[in-house]
Amino acid sequence: MNQQGGESDGRGGVEVSKDRNGIEQVILRNNRGASARVSLHGGQVLSWKTERGEELLFTSSKAIFNPPKAVRGGIPICFPQFGNRGSLEQHGFARNRMWTIDKNPPPLPNESNAKPHIDLLLKPSEDDLKIWPHRYFEFRLRVSLAAEGYLSIISRVRNVNSKPFSFSFAYHTYLSISDISEVRVEGLETLDYLDNLYQKERFTEQGDALTFESEVDRVYLDSCNTVAVLDHERKRTFVIRKDGLPDVVVWNPWEKKAKAVGDLGDEEYKQMLCVDGAAVEKPITLKPGEEWTGRLELSVVPST
Ligand code: TA6
Image (cartoon, rainbow, N blue to C red):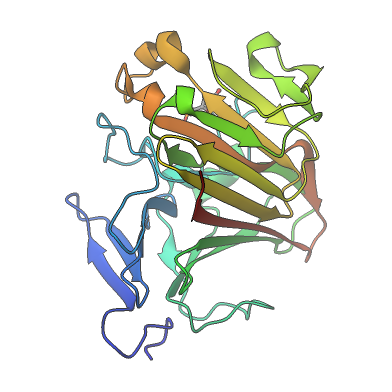
């Protein structure tokens, strides 16, 4: 068993390598052959595969793998700001920074170290403190892969010794789907949502599952902690479980917006859907010494 929970049979485990730009990335494998890949750039999960090697996350064919821009796909971390309301760049700076491997993280309660996992750490640079002053934070990220193949991401943000500060957050999760017309989302029925297409005006979702016929860019508020994304054609359902993340962002750019997004193929809106565990409407406030934990667990199950 190596220090990050690698398994003895040599197939499961943790491997540190570099991508084509020399950026370090970590590959997690479980004993059944499932895998996940995390880049130290942005702490971004870039891949999550089943034991049959099937990719479950979307990555644009036009993705740019050159820092500081975040790769279009996988699970970029939006921190300390979700969206473009605020003084920071869209979705904050964490996804555009180099993280480090945290070799001696504080213990995580209720989290087994036996699973292949990696711990990453982000602290504010001098430049970060210029654009987000007096916020001395430590952001610890744990990505792990369970024996059953589900992916777990745990964020811990601690106010080290600053005055109280607030932030918004999202795991910007690009799910790979067969076709946007074949997909529905369950678990958001009857919730209120802020609609980005109508200046974040508040609406209420009707009573049945969410399906897609045009651009959707919404923040569903105070959702329950489980949301399901059913892909009828692939006969599989993504199950998204979250904790510490009251909101759910749902985004599909549809045809017109997809053409306007330079690092997204014109037709690729059909193969992706973002369903993000998030904390947007009510930013999280931390007093000195306080720590927030946001957990996300993604699994995929067969469904008719
Ligand atoms: O709601 C998700 C969203 O804020 C959309 O408005 C769209 O901008 C998307 O994020 C992608 O943002 P990005 O900065 O990654 O291009």
